[in-house]
Image: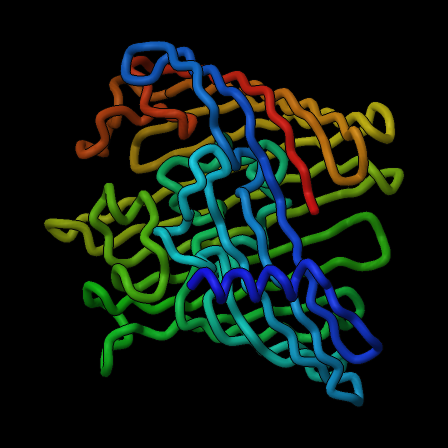
Length: 362
């Protein structure tokens, strides 16, 4: 295994390239100090990694086959820079690993492990600018980037600003396509309009049927015991003066197959602004309203981001969440507390988190 890793790293570091092919090593490092005012009844000061973006390194390859046709591949590893531990369940290339063919005329077809297409809403929702502490309750809509195993994805070429994507994640179990433990399958679609003007639109749909197997289990599946989660999402983004952005998204989700035949619905609405005070200094305020079953909450986020260079930035973040429901976990008896900024559950109906961090890309 060590020899394999050294070989892969050598290929990426060399980044060999000619007119026909290239292999590139890339990555992102994000780490900082977080203060949470209530985690299990106590304040907490700790180092946390991968908040604005998950820590990763990867290899990206392209081979020109002629006539516009190319072979493409990506191997991407997720990890915790604070501990060195592998992310994504301890898998080597857990964030994604796929290979396929790409053509400007016919589109792109890939096979392997990839996030389902809900991730395409990333930069229409607060997770794209405020990060992990803005992930919606129970990650019900999978906007944190949940992966699908055994996935086949097709992306159409862009025509007049319009493009579509479709994904099918096969079951791990022979003869099983859906509904059984260990044999989940993934169906996912998305469509995007991104013309020459300032407006961009995105729509997504994903159905995770079964547990385990294809499709990483979300918090919602683990907490609710659901065997099927369907998510619909819509996002809009308006870019002004080619630099600032106003964005919004809404997702509607339903988890079924819980014990006793119960089901749980969830709706989340995001809105925010990314405004450049200077070319190097960005202000990113945003708000979220969410509902899971009969439990509702509101959240405010503020991220100040200063770029020291094109590769490195430092940032300060403030996050506040408040329950709008009397009693904790109303309608969700298996949750000790509904209020959490992914820093640990609060024992009250509110929680505050403050963070200072540094991020570097290569």
